[in-house]
Image (cartoon, rainbow, N blue to C red; front, side, top):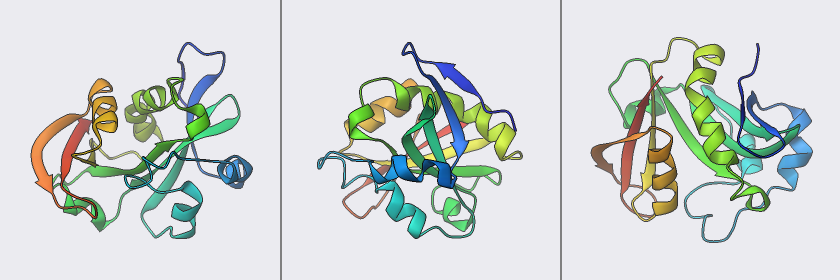
Length: 166
C-alpha cells in the first residue's frame, strides 16, 4: 500500500504507517510530558494491551516514529457513535521531543485519506477528548474534527465526542 505523506514545512516528510517492529526502538525512547499522561497512554503499553479490532499506527518524520495512535474498529466504537461505518481514533500522542514541530497536525491531516486506503469502508472518524485538554481539542478542531455536542464520562472527567468525515 502506498503511504500518504505531507510536507509540514520541516525537512522530513510526515507519513502514517501501520505499526511494525521497525518502529520499536523509536517507541522505546518515546516520552510524554507529565501533564499529558492523564489524557493518553504510552505507545508501548498500548501495544502490550492490543486487542482484536485495534490497529496501531505511527506518525513518522523521515524514517523515525514521532507519534502514535490506535484506530479501533471493534465494538468499542459504539460507545461514541451509532454511525455504522465509524472508526475510533484513540491514544493519540506525539513524543515530547518532537512536539511543536507540526507532526501531530500533519499526521491528523493525512488521516482521512490514509483510512480510505488502509482500512476501506469507513466514512467517519470519531474520538473523545477530555474537557480539560484544551490543547488537544484545539488541534482536533484545526484538522477538521467537529464537536458533536455529546459528552461522555471518562476516567478523569467528562469528554467531548468529536467526529470527522472520511
